[in-house]
Length: 448
Image 1 (tube, rainbow, N blue to C red):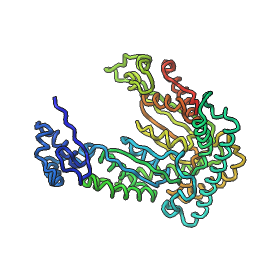
Image 2 (image 1 turned 30 degrees about the vertical axis):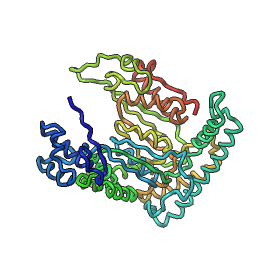
Image 3 (image 1 turned 180 degrees about the vertical axis):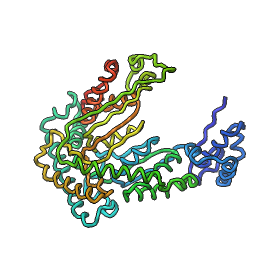
Image 4 (image 1 turned 90 degrees about the horizontal axis):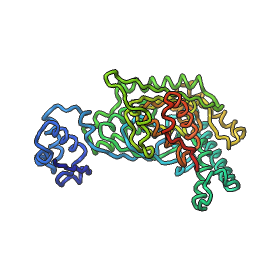
């Protein structure tokens, strides 16, 4: 047995043996699949000083499909600065085979200056001033409530639920997080954030194609910017990243569904929790499941442990009617399976620590503004939403992934609202799979 590593480096540095560009790596591995020469012999035939000619020569050998080799490029990392929280959310949703990170709301500048212009987001010019005023007022509500809650945490440290003896330096951070996590619902979805994703050229091409096919101006602009940068790494594969008919049709239909649902359910009130969980345990009769649920779960030391086939083969779909976008942004990053949301405002969430009556006038005006955008069928309606906007959210996956998410989001230090959502979903899951209750580590999210 022989194991050989192939290092991916930028084109300008790809001069030494076994250091390859993403596209050269893909073409070499494609040739490798149609040869018994071994990787060393194939690499010895590659002219590293003229990588493009080698790539073209290999690809002409057999008619390789671009998708079949696109996944062989290795991880190409792209950092995307100063995009709206909505665009970052959407990229995570459609890039289901990526790894990535986004700036936490705990580290983002909370100021109207940290929002793209109305023109950049495609806000109708006659509504731009009203939109800007709502954005400014939203940040003012956030900053006012953050300061008040921070003072509450100082005066009543027990609300932070910190363990006895917690050092003051840690307590200060926990007080800040306590205040931020309850004030953040006033943050506009249009607020700028930064994100980074790592995935193969195949998935980049599909994600960029998806963005380019969407009706939102920001999505198209980011698609163009990503394509331009990715062309430096995989120019042949990124030719397949332009808007495409089937993507356009589905994006437009999803938009129409969101507009219709948005009109019907638009509200400035607060939705009560409604949770739906569906579990499918059927298996082929010729591959009957012989492992018990207990045996599938009991051997794990923690949520990172490996589940058995009784859990990995079990399909789970779960949904909430009232997921605030603040929570949706993080739950959407559990990238197994499929996630779907119409991204509307069927209610506006505020925690019990915030006096809703103080802010109801603002929420009513924000809701009325959304109504104007819905009536015009505006794709830019998304930028009238705030992190407190509640929307239905569905996730379909398998039981091992669901259990991991439930244990993570109710575990030590979890956000209080995550814990409420996932605790409710677990209760519904136990109705379908009662024998799992003993082996799932549901936490209390303390301390925050």
